Image (cartoon, rainbow, N blue to C red; front, side, top):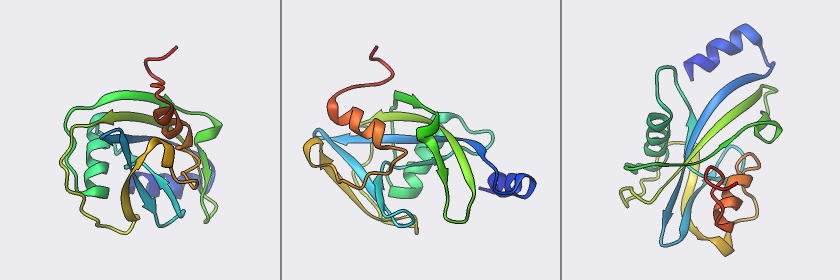
Length: 154
């Protein structure tokens, strides 16, 4: 986040381009979602890459920070960009994110609710996804629910 703060000092609220990495964690054909406090919606664990990290390191670090779970093997699920990945935050900051999304069923099975970003975690069946999904993540969460893997499907 220091990088983003530094960039904000230089460009103000104009759009920044960031790389976000997340993990679709699956267990028994269910997906782990976290209920975010800041936007009051459900999303997968993930966050912004810091300089020097790999995509995989970012995804694993962010998942651990947000859930307390250690992730093992990752498989690329999809790459997402464009207008669907744009956000204007309540303070007026604008950001476009290139999202690198992985999928894994290789993780420790103990969720530790910590930090202030999320208020709960829950595994959801494909047919029972919450209505208030994060709008920048809705596409790949729904692709997972429909059985589509955007990276490997034509």
